[in-house]
Image (cartoon, rainbow, N blue to C red; front, side):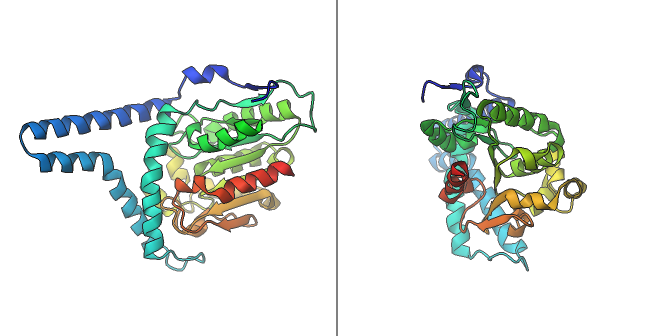
Length: 319
């Protein structure tokens, strides 16, 4: 990192958020339960039960992901997007099986502060320095989900802020001030309108902020990845405030559309996948009027690793 860049929140290294602590407890608890289960049944000379229970504790989430993939297939019906075949869903399932623990059991609980925010020390080089980026994560996530992106931008000396949206299960409207603070700081530090990258629910947070805070005049471009722009079938089973807001045809989504200027969608690039196990049917991740791009074969969390999305960010930073 060059000398003219600094971490915008140096104290954040020692202050993991509520979600990070929650996921730390869940991860460590699962490991302790696995060890305890295996030790108990091995002591009883029942190795098969010991192995089966340990596998279920550590790998049970893979069954949940498989059920979600089945729902993707069953709910597609007359959706205008491409229909994923069984082999595509199987490959996407396996990639998600590998990606999910890396995010939810490592990056987010234990490494969310690995790459701190970086901004220019001053805006003396406004209009001459690099454009900045604001990252907005999704539901039950934190800034650690962006670690591969942040590592790359740190090496490039690209200014960025990756927010933590908390309270975790609050209304989407309650976290808009966090986005406003991040955008203001990037604007002030660089003198340029930032690019915003948002995953999943983060794209709805961005749209609500955009409608309330003159986003059309303040944001260079927006990139969303797997965002339920029109809700998601799966949210019918969610009962937190923000999960209910993401239900298809929810009152909150209707009010969002009423507040938006339709032309604003032209500044959005929206990535979606026909193998997304969280936002489905696939067309729900498409924003009318935006540049909607299909990422075939990607499940929801794994979609964040798609090179196409990172390439689009680099293209927008160069403009």
